[in-house]
Image 1 (cartoon, rainbow, N blue to C red):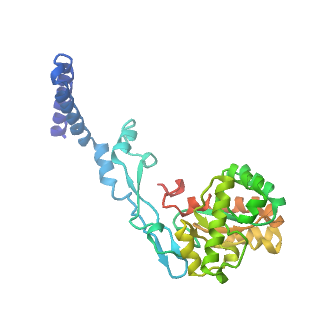
Image 2 (spheres, rainbow, N blue to C red):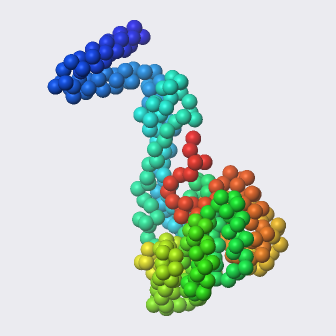
Length: 323
């Protein structure tokens, strides 16, 4: 302890002298400032708080997870790791001089393998350790229910992903723009709602490209996600979508709202089945309009954040995943 005190005192004296001297000898100012910085480093490295942060660095680190192809769920995105930013954490904690877990500053660490590194494969869910879920709303009909769905999402400050049928966009540009202007993510849902599994490769490409073009012309958006109508696909569909910069998205939880179920029963079933990483399929129907608020409340009570498919599938951690 005596040695440490002597070092800190001497360091303080050095800083005082060279700081004063720098006003007398401008030519040597750069060298003197370098000595000043070195002296500060010595002081910091002797600070018990700084040493405590260093000693806890490893215990608070979380390794990143690589994206993988799962036997059941197919492509699953990775998740960033976390490590303490020692310098920023120290600067934040030195005001009180004590270690406080809530004041730790983290940096994210990217995985080595991400979705773009995987071979083309459908995606049914996000990473199960990222506490997010997404509503994915397929739109080819149900215009009368869209405004109320948008209002409920807006009232709850939630952004979702709307997969738009290309012919629907062509016939309903104002509604499409309303969805986009509300800040929701736009996906590709093919052009004429066909059974993609039964199409030739050229027709698969036509359905995807034509929809991309009409979305670009109408909304100036380039979709990243493709939802095949009725979830029907074969590997050619996934391959062609990827060739055009799209990932093929299926779902984890299905509302089956097109069957017009009782909205309370539907909402309870969806809440029960929704977990971290879930992608929840729905359509603009009366059941969805009536049950949407209940689903939002129930899912958020499970500690999950609702966001777009892009947010749920990204490697970036959301605030819930931080210490």
